[in-house]
Image 1 (cartoon, rainbow, N blue to C red):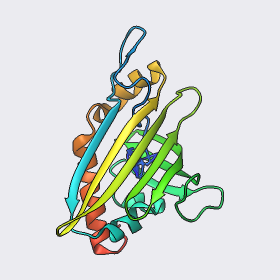
Image 2: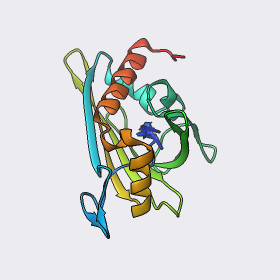
Image 3: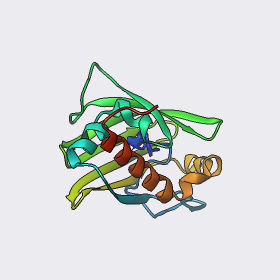
Length: 199
């Protein structure tokens, strides 16, 4: 859940799930706003949407199991439940491990905010105090003729000004994540339709 990124993600991941959410997470009070000495370099919100050849129930089974995010996220390479949790529920935490390119790696703890199977899955990434980064990721599944429409959105809730500049410089792909997130969702659909784990 673009460990997403950027799940932490995410995703999933987008993390988390695709974002398990990454350092650039999703938008909030400062979305689109200015900082002292300049404007935000990273987009404060974003969305991707695709239609896949799998049922909402099949997609949900993969999406809501954060341990499977590495099967479909381009950035979140894996995640594990925390505090003894084994399934998604509001308040449950998980940690996503992310990678961008060969050198940039990071992890984020995520908190699940909403679970409405098989329709909506929402999680928030929680960054370290120094970066003050937090992002909200939302995945929505809607049945359509022949499959499922998957829509993923992110919003940056907070991020230190210096962290915004560093992430934009070290992970240039986060300046426009639409194509990468769309590709994640297509892979999510493929994994879901296959009904099995991929390598």
